[in-house]
Length: 217
View 1 (cartoon, rainbow, N blue to C red):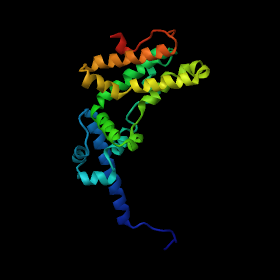
View 2 (cartoon, helix red, strand yellow):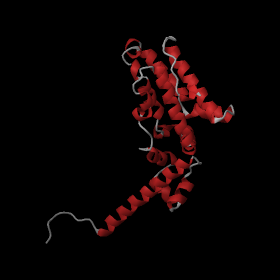
View 3 (cartoon, rainbow, N blue to C red):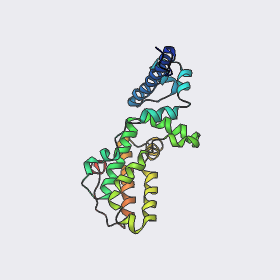
View 4 (cartoon, rainbow, N blue to C red):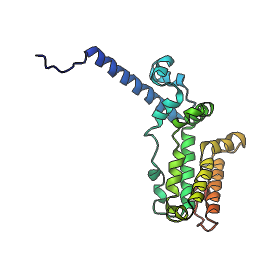
């Protein structure tokens, strides 16, 4: 009996399901390749997903958009990242932990991070595809200052966050490892030291001298 409701041809549903499975396979292949730390390219992702590179590009216009989707949900939230200092109100200590957390993630997903940077540097309009994890981490690390520096000197708070955004970054880490030839641990310790120095200076040098694991080694 005809109910008067529109029906979807079985073939159309099958094609839609196949497209969904193909998209998921491409994203999962990207996730697995990211976790190896190796270079990530659309060709390598396509090979791993058992599709052609042209097919991968039909689902994702560029590598940056694919990596954006692949990274979604893979990274800890700022609250999870700073769980070890959840009870601390020392912004210097919190920034140290946030910085080290981000840089160790960068090392873990180094190939994908470099690919994302390369894609967005050459195409600034695609910069929105970058996860921007540093900003959430910095905001959460400095949350204890919201009622002090944030309230009395909002411009100073904004300046501190902008200064930290330059330092708490994959770019800073790669500068030290690639150009300064530091080992990963030395590079992380250097960036943590710079981030905590900036934070302490913004507070007039009166902040406690807490530090994250990288400083304590």
